[in-house]
Image (cartoon, rainbow, N blue to C red; front, side, top):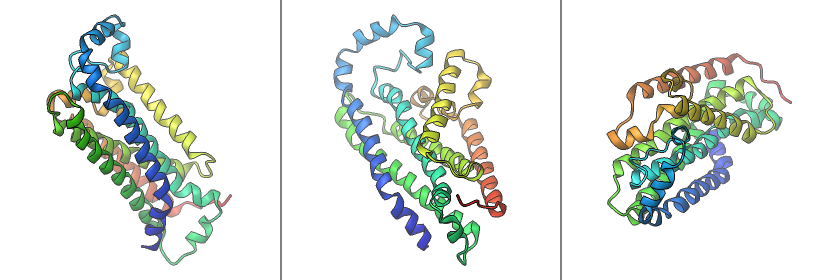
Length: 265
């Protein structure tokens, strides 16, 4: 429990920075919606002049872009990048900071098992990610009625935040895999940004090519924001696949960490 509290304490500054950054970005662009709505027809005409391939790559749905939910769906794809980078950065840093800081050997010498050490760190990370998601969701839930021209569909907004939480957990486990198999990473942020943006580029290519099999390659494709807006639900087969990937990654992390020699830099 002391390790769990220590991890939360160490993450507090980064947590506040990420929350403020995500809220600043979303609030800024959502505040443009009333003006955007007034000039929606002009904007639609501009979009129609763009190549169809570009609109597909950017996930712009002409039938929804002028609604609050459709506008938010487009913005939210970029907000998801922030959630994902934060999660992967935390995952990489859970063990990487101990190795680079020379404290891994001291920590493993304590009278607690490796699984308990890892569980305490993972639990603290999950609390931070959940806290980020909940604060963000609460603020967007409160400001949306003030910015939307018509009453917003709050269920859709909550489904968006749920999608963010799923991706947070996925990239947290991916970061844990990096921290286990690529020890001594000097800059977790650079690695996190590179990996997340690589997945996002694959997401754009998948939307551009419309090859169905490509949807399984990047987790950003598991949550079609347009589908969520239209049907007010997820595509559950992708949720199931994502849950399986997360469970397999977690099992691999625990199994490897229990037996792996930790090299102290």
